Length: 295
Image 1 (tube, rainbow, N blue to C red):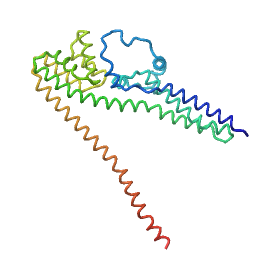
Image 2: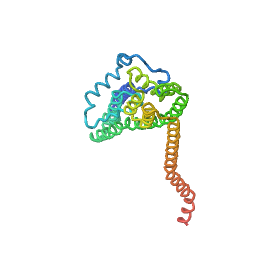
Image 3: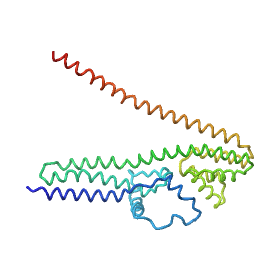
Image 4: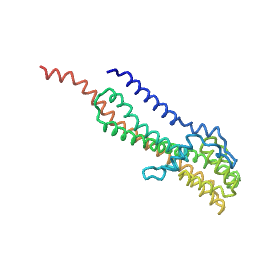
């Protein structure tokens, strides 16, 4: 039996599937670099341009699958990272489809060659792989959002000091918040600039804009800044000492969290280190044990 056509057909199917998945899963640009290149926009029509093909497919999937019980969209994490829910769902569907397709492509040449493979084996393998790949984007977004919130917390610690210095220089609450945000160049400061600029355009209090940003992105550390500045505006309280104390306590919390994470990572390395030591001792003792057993 000539197996060349079957092998060529399997190769063609695999190559086509790889090209399709590669087209759907184009890598995301670096968020920090993109935000540094993109200044805050004051155009109310920004973001209303033509949608890309991925965004169109993502919105279609979101409208048809977003209400299903097993589909969970981490909207706050995606908003923090600057990713669209439609693109996120499109990635999940594409990865799940890849998981369903890979076992079929792997077992297809065997079936064409007449090698008996039960049908349920690739089916079960495809379902298991699809389920695994379905949750990978959720785990990735969760870890990225966690790191982004930690980075934002470090930026807020510096922002509190900057606001305190502006207030010590007799700047008003609104002016202190805006001028302190204009000093930084990272993406957390750009988010603050955008929120404060939006508050100025909508003629609302800047601390209200910070509270809205806290609710939108789930950033509890930012709520302290809003509360302190609200008290300063309404009660005329001297907030320099309060801001510096909150900045110091926030840095202490961040250092404690980093130390705890480092200790946890060190404990995770204990078991592999012990296993390696046991393997080394077995390798050293193996010749002597074999000699004793054979004499």
